[in-house]
Structure formats: structure tokens, C-alpha cells
Image: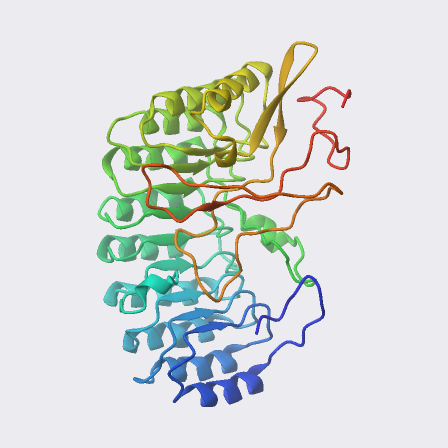
Length: 408
């Protein structure tokens, strides 16, 4: 029932549609997943869904409300319904206008219940939520009160496996608060702190001043707290820091933590972080010595030739398989360069059966795309999904002039 599709026009649902739908589902024991992304659901419609979630006989395990129109009142009602619900496994709320109060109410409810979001069909008999996706909540404050409440929640709720905080306006101060809670949490596996991206955003989403203010802006100072956490907390396996600004020093903090024998980090994305030669070479070195890190994504940084050579050695030696990074090396006139490969960090630690898949059709080439799937030999992760490569012969995506010559 998603209100957006990139191939056809879709009629969007409103509050009255949700009222009718909730009545139909009250005694329905077969529907386990509900995808309501990109519709026109307001606080009123969320109230109907909140009443539905309190039904004891409800079979619903997964609910996706990404990019609707409900605000803080709807978020509060939904949070209260979670206190009475022990069956929902997956709840996605990203892209709604919850503001600080709604987000804090949600965090407060999660302290008292073993709830979070990320639906996995394997967990049908499990009564605890596993993952929270609250990315892009359209907050209108830069105080980061939500970070304090989420830190408290993380300190108390160790059943949480996956946490998405993309485009929350997270700063170094907020990162420090979060790591305080994460030091007491030994269940979290996936931490998403990237600037939030949409595969097929609706037409009404624009880059307004509010959106710019909500870009995560973690720098080297914030990453220092995260790196310190990695040295002490062995549970984190996937971290997405894409489109922040950690620069060389931040990358070196991460490299130091990753190289330690006790670090369990397997997948890391630092795309578009203004990292230069020193930081990228330190990451390459840490990957060479790490026994756990298997996926590394670096595109959008300053890829000088020594960096290109280092990553060519990693890929050619098999230490960094081509399917587990977003760059591919090539040589022109004896010089090594890196081209972008359309592969990204997995979007979710566990898969859901009612949400979008990770097969983004972002290729802009006429060549026939192909996909590869790879999983680490010592990992029990679901297979990593890659996006189509763009052949180097295609000029539809020109290389950056400071990284590639104009000879292709």
C-alpha cells in the first residue's frame, strides 16, 4: 500500500482509508506486514493504527510509516501503544514531523519495553522489537535533547539490534551523549548515522533550510567518542557514517580502533567525509591487519594516487573483495585511479518482508547491469546486495577531474 512507485502513479491513502483498514485488520490473523510508506496519514490516522496495535489478537509484526504527515501528537500516541503491544517486531517512522517531544516520548516508551524495529521473518515467534528507524524526523531544534533520551534508552534496552539516526542533526555533542548509553549496551549491531538518502523520494521532498540544518554533522571530535566505544564494546558490527565530516583525524581514530584484536566491526562506510591521503591510507592499513572488517566504502573522499594504489592492492589480493567496496581500480599511462562502483552498505541488519528492498536502480548507463552477492566466510549475515556497476567506458557519469584524467 505504498503511496509511491517509480514506475506508475499511485493513489495515496488518507486517514479515512486507515480507519477502514484498521477495522478490517482487527480480527485478521493472516496479515503480518503493513507497508504504508509515502501516504497522507496524519495524527488522526496514526491514532487509528495505535488502537489497532493494542488488539491482543493482532497478527501484525511489521509496520512501515515512512514519509507520512503525522507529527508529535501521533508519535506520542504510537509510543504509548507500544507499551501495550508485545507482538510488533518492526516499526519505521523516518521522514515524519515528530519534533523533539514525539521522539523523546518514543525513546521513553522503549525504556520500558523490549521494543524496537526491523522485521525478520525468522523472528515471528519472538516478542521483542529489534531495530529502530527514526531517520529524518524533521526536528525544529538544534538542542539535541533527543540524544540524551535515546542514550538513556540504549543503556536500558539491550534487545535493540539496529538503530537508524540518519539526518537527525547529530553533532559531536550528541555523539558523546549516545556513546554514553552505548557503553552499557551490548546488543546493538547496526548503527546508522549517515546523511539520510531516499532511493525514490516523493516529488514534495525538497532540500529546505530545515533539511540542511538536520544533516548529521559529526566531525573528528565526535568520532573520537565512537572510536573509544569500539575499543570497549564488542557488539557493534556495522556503522554508517556517510556524508559527515570526520576528515583525516577522524578516519585515523577509527583505524586505530578497527586494528585492535577485540574490535568486531565488519562493515564501515565513510563515504563523502572529506578524508584525504593520511586518513584513507590508515583505513587501508587497518583493513590489512584486521581479522573482522570485510566491507569498506570510501567513495566521495580525496582519492589521491597513493590511496588508489593501496586499495588496488587490497582488492587484487582478495583482502577487500570487489563486491564489498564501492571503488574499482584502473590504470592509465602507468597511473592508478579509482572509479565509483554502485555498491553501498546494507540498509538494514535484518530484512523485512513489507519494506523496500536494497536493489536500487541507480545506474544511468545503457549497458546491461548485473548484480553480485557476497557474504563474509566467517559471517552469519544475510547476503550483501550490490547495485549495478557502471562500466568505465560509459561517459554518462563523468569522473571527478581531480581524481581521473579526461582520457576515458
